[in-house]
Length: 171
Image (cartoon, rainbow, N blue to C red):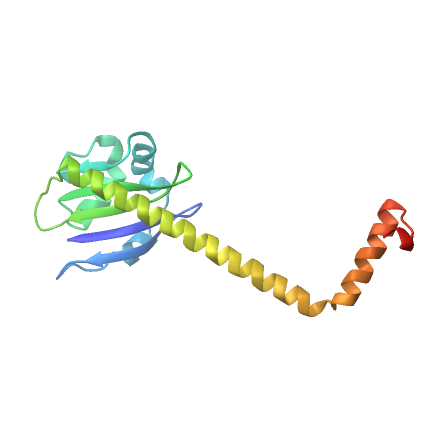
């Protein structure tokens, strides 16, 4: 009924993507009210055990009371949460909520969804790397326009002379 990708920042989760079935309202505003500490049970479980499969949200353990209250307030009956990892670090989650009825996901489906989560995490990593590369290229381009090449060579030669005590003829 509802699926999403949540990425973790240092202090709060951020809903990066969301898909809602017919008649299911967006949860973007609700996610903004959460903190990483309010998802403590999820984060610990994902780090230690991997996917969270809860066919009945009502059966969540007592130490998951914050997550349980959050889900029940939104009418979630069942949930599957798959971790997103980059370099063995938890960066977020891929979540699936069943709202209209309780649901149990098959082990094969959970495994397949973990593969999908790994693909998403890799795509996000590549996107971030491309953004960093573009910023570095742009910075380099701006620097080149600020510094004339002959001046750059002159400064480089002078720095080599000063650093290594070279004479002009040796360079």
